[in-house]
Length: 106
Length: 393
Image 1 (tube, each protein chain N blue to C red):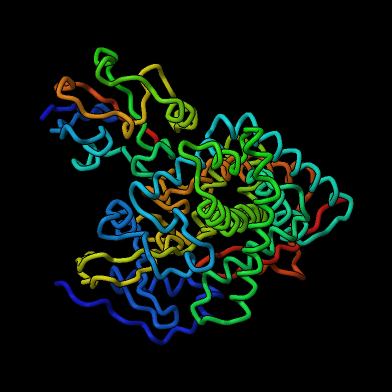
Image 2: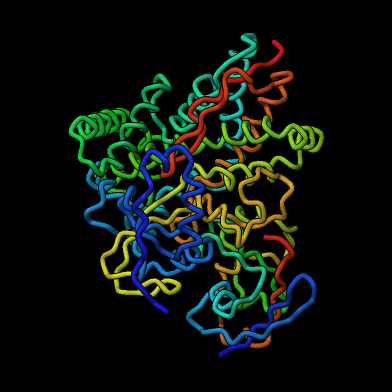
């Protein structure tokens, strides 16, 4: 199982073993990572599981969807080039050791 | 220790309608799930329990073959889980996307709002329920669905009759008749425009449905449009009135938001937390399960009281207060999980950024009337049913 390192806005890190059949949001929720609210539970309808992904892993994180991109415009914390909705990113074996930063506000 | 749901039998239905919050608090302090005889339903009122339920659609299903909603409206995706729900939801998504809201709906809804506020501005007094909130919600929903223009009262009546029919647990024949009549009216209104939407793709919901891949079958179009009419009219209407009331009743907060318009989104979220337009919705327990020490049997209908959860003092301090400055925290006014309200962003935009800011901007010295206090009603749906105000015309 790949290990994902979640970093909170105040710098606290937490290592989570993520299942390959999960989204990053599901892995975070299962491990109780603070700061991921996920109001819509993965429907890309709420923008409350927004995270910043390490660009070094862009290839396995994949392309952003159109609906997801529009929803990110409504995110509570600043949108950057590394922003994704974590519910739309599938866990991959190649993500072992990847850092995901959780914003201060959802 | 796990036990059966406790029972509360000394509450009258009228008490729930008038002011459900003391009852909700009593239920919350009693157990995770309590059978309330007046409601004839087991109610869940704690924030964390509702979140847990919404994350587990296998144990707590939306699918209910005997639901009155299905009887009155037909096979809707509100009463489905998993893939069946997702297909229906996906078919309407194009109309609700943030890009569509910004580019298409915002200017249209601003125009309707402007027209309504201009037409009443000379009067100096009005009941904002009929003068603004109800027509605003009705006219914008009409456009969003893609209906031909009709009097706002028609859609508003259809909506009310459908809601009454869906809540007609007493099986009152007259209520059932009106709900069915509204249903026929809606079927005819759909029929009248469907060919147009097939031929001219556009951002409306009917267009999204007929151009979905695969296109939504006609019986599902009919049922889902009824759900959208039943559910899409009273919520924005009530949110407009609740936000206006919250600010008028708290002048210091009103002054702050008028000086700092960036506070409007906070004010909107606080309004729907404070008095959530949808106060309760049902789920069905599919297998015997333990919900925070209460044993729920298979097949049990439970009512998720998000209106109660949004005043859970385990999560919100001074929960009965309207306070736009409370620390930002998510609430359950739009539900949670796969059924999270599709209209959330339309509502945030229309109510919180267009209608209510415009109202305070255009009507000088807007104020409540001491001689005619506002009236708030309901627990399944709750909101002001009358909001008399005055301003300097």
